[in-house]
Image (spheres, rainbow, N blue to C red):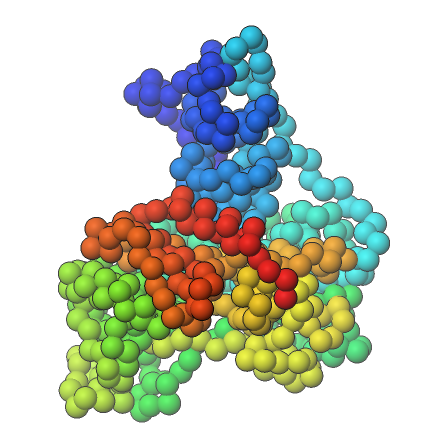
Length: 516
């Protein structure tokens, strides 16, 4: 979402007109001031003697950059941690892909003026990249695959780029599928990451509804299920993950829905139009976000999960109790410590002996990496596709990114695999550069966010296991940070209503990464 929004007269009065100048001393080193230049909201800041004027809103979801954080030559959005270069406006880290505008800053005495909007950076000129492959194939149309394709063109790669996706829809903003779109607050045109015409314009051959059957890493070809083949100079495997399907009676009936694709979300929305009661199986982030969206539609929701508290294994008992209480206050009924044993029409049977009535069931019991094709190709696996710090697999020229990749994390010193949207996008961006011979290590700090009604949780770092949680602030007041540590090492930070603190923790993890 980009553009310059019109402002009301009242808004204009509350913001200084930068064309009329402001006192240089009114903006401290590292501070930010939002004003206007014509109809545009502009953020003015300085680092030492250098001044910068950029668009005041993130191009991802128009987050207020003035509430974000400046780190070096970048400014970071408080909503979803998009990162922009202050000098050029370039979106240097997902989830934003479009740049922010930049303006020239002029000095006249002790006043600074912002009047002239600078031209957008020229698109990269197709170049003869020394290590660039003759062609690139991307297997998968999710976060990592899309981000890789976009970055290849941004980096000036001029060779053929083919994206093969099993989905029927072009790449979409998947986090929205369990949040605003499912609750009815997001329009259909919000969901695609690009309009379809842009793929043709950027010369990306997007092949939808097609599956890769085999990969021959020596012949450097992929074979599709329809019998066709595609050669490649470099390959990115970004096949994502598939929902776990429970081996119980009735689990394959039309009563049971999953949420992974745009089509899945549309199917739930359609069924929800006439539904009054739904059972959600699983108290994961997806299951709980689905529950919140359905409650927004005034549908009765029962959540069944084997856990004693939702999210306890990921974020601890304290957060689990808060989330449980929050959902209960919105009418969600939990059936914890139980599993679903059978689904027969409208009747959902539980391991505790009871039954629940449901118009339909949403399964949210986790996902597993989609690695069958990689396994058949003989790539090294470790509960995912094992890659090195450059996201290259055991086969030269074959890379993996997103939910399928297990990589050496410089922050923990361990090989990890993470199923987070922003991580997948950032891996796709780095993989694209490395397919062009850049040799850039992937060292981004893992980040995700989850929203439940009016409560948002931001999480940076990675803590599969911890022995201490330090809470600063109040969970009950919904204003706090939680630090997860093991043997004295800080591994992750979760925040509620402390967005800038989350950004600061991310920056601190970046500075403190250790060699693997």
